[in-house]
Amino acid sequence: MTLALALRLRDAGELLPKSLVCLSPWTDMTSESDSLTANSERDSMFVAEDIERYANAYLGDCSRRDPLASPLLANLGGLPPLLIQVGREEVLLDDARKLHTKVQQAGGSSELHIYEEVPHGWHYGGPFLPETREALREAAEFVARKQ
Image (cartoon, rainbow, N blue to C red):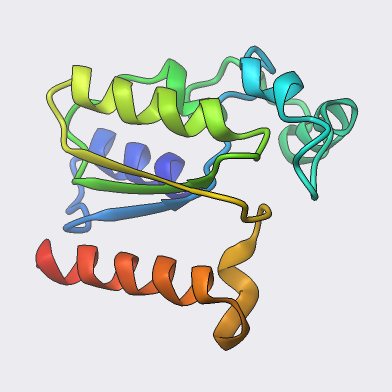
């Protein structure tokens, strides 16, 4: 949703935020990522079989190839600098990697941080998980640097 909003703002000629933070972004609704199946048994939240159901619930009648649904299919030029955080064992790992690469290929700025041994949604761990504190500190510092 972060990317869809940024793409809409950019295309409408509106003022963009100074930076974007993408937490385990789902950037390819076409289900063509290798990590979707490779990490299916390791991801504690998602398995490959459920992705279709989640995509249908999110998209309704919209096409999976719509760039606002699958930002990897969009022109990613002209976006603010991105920080992308994802867990190595997530089914969304390749979505994050491909987003990072495609933003850089479009002349943009992107930082990718792959966290070890964290579940999808680890950002909600609050003060209990050191990885949550690290990720949120990193995101706050990234945003502050881009102001």
